Image 1 (cartoon, rainbow, N blue to C red):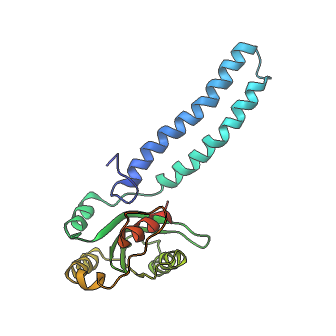
Image 2: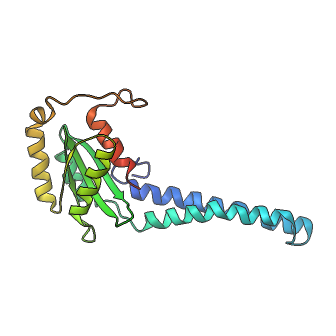
Image 3: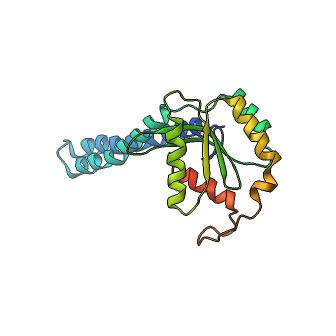
Length: 201
């Protein structure tokens, strides 16, 4: 779980640990510079103090990112295992937190089959219609006309996963694979997953 990558279950928990350590180091460096330069020069009024203050900028930015991840939670393990049992041959991505100027959306999981994308949203604060429309809009801006739906019930979601698996051949037939520079080797569904993750925290 601690090594989970973006799109994998446990990503948020992994990022909390990584970003905490990164933030701690970024704050420790300017603090060390400030302390050692003060001891060396005998006063804080030296040019290294300015260097230390400038060093607080990336540290502060890292702290903001850490706070954003601390506010998110990974899908409970029991629910993840339930979803994992129904994955079958579907392309899957977990823990997508999409941000926009209007509002944000927490999507626990998306499954992709052909041009069909179905997401699970259990966060009561997330507008499922907005989440679906936002993801669909962003994908179309990148040239993909995918149909996106968001469900709020895990039982209905797993039933939809089973249905997609049952009709996978039909849903994937006739899709023209478009090569994109820099994405050689990516399949159609891999690209949909990749771009969906790009829109997420």
